[in-house]
Length: 430
Length: 93
Image (tube, rainbow over all chains, first blue to last red; front, side, top):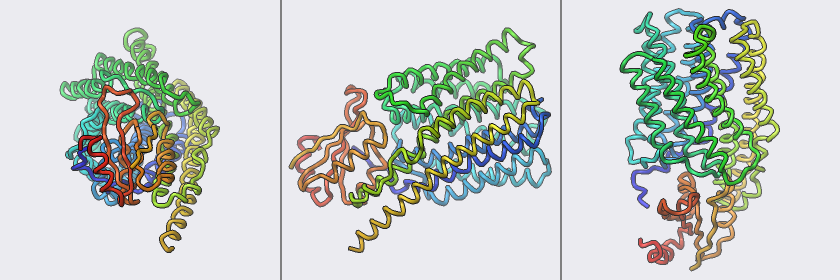
């Protein structure tokens, strides 16, 4: 097989994806405390400054952190090529992302110009470094499979969402809410949705030993979604019919997710499967709710429509999948990195911990239950803002638990890694 | 020269790697491990090279069974000359 153009030297050290994964729940722990502090008024409008802080905590703080970290690992696995100058790119983009997100979230509730300028500088530096590195990867002679093609479109959506976001912070689109809607659409359904869809074409068949997605789904879903997003940008209008089509295509994709998962080879009980099922069902609920609120119960649900849809999409769809994948990826990455060291000395295989030691199945199940409860409390809070304390508390519990599970797995990795390195050093001395 | 064949195409990660490691640890001189895999394990390649192993990947046509995508041949770098000669007629190199 022709391997020219591929670089296997750029495989990231494990701490690069892990640092992004670790900071993600920390953002939501901070958001949970902020929800508890802010009180019920926040929940009256999507335009409330504190609501913008909360939304960006979820989308930039949690979702984008995990997705940026995951791409460092995904490119070498899918395309056989890694980030150029991986440590430098990761350091700049990580520090910029964390500080920029903090400044942005602070800037909504404390709108002084220096905080805004800092958020633009940090996030701008972070995304430009990250996107430049990815553009370099995508310019290489990669396989043109459905995963890479889909990631290309997701990265394009991230670039558009980033430009719109920067424009909004800098006040270029003042008073025109269409650009806010476009920013949300390109960030959520574009960057978030497209990346999840594209990567799922690789990881669902791989992790669950399931059949490949049908060609018609894997080839046409990402490009159709991006075309619809382009239409919204070109006509500068987010019409009901476009949203309806976007959701419908996501529903068709969700049906195929359920179908592929149902036909997996080994039906071992696995909480991460339940996360995919929950996300798929949430997409159907979102579509039905949109059709009902738009065409039938117009006045009754219109007032809460956008907040409810954003909550279901972000919390039950995006975060469900991302959290499920974290539970799958962290033990897998830890174990695989240790396993590969055993190629240097097969005796080290005896030092490998049990794979299930990285994540106790019962603990993962508990996290899933917490996720259902906190998500339900979010919906209740949108209807009845006086329940904000319930959502804040459950959010705090859920993401503290997730952080604990992640730290436990990483600690086991460090201990085992130390033992294996010690053995390898002894062998070299001999 | 002998081929030891293992099929990891229907195993859940990280089991394929566990099986590959076990088989490599038992590989006798002048034996080559043939792995039937559902995908190309790109990250493994660098580690194999670093650890004194050579490899060759032969993708299978799409018409083959759903889970079987490629054959990976792994052998010691020190025996590379023997295996390249041995595998040449098999793989039309």
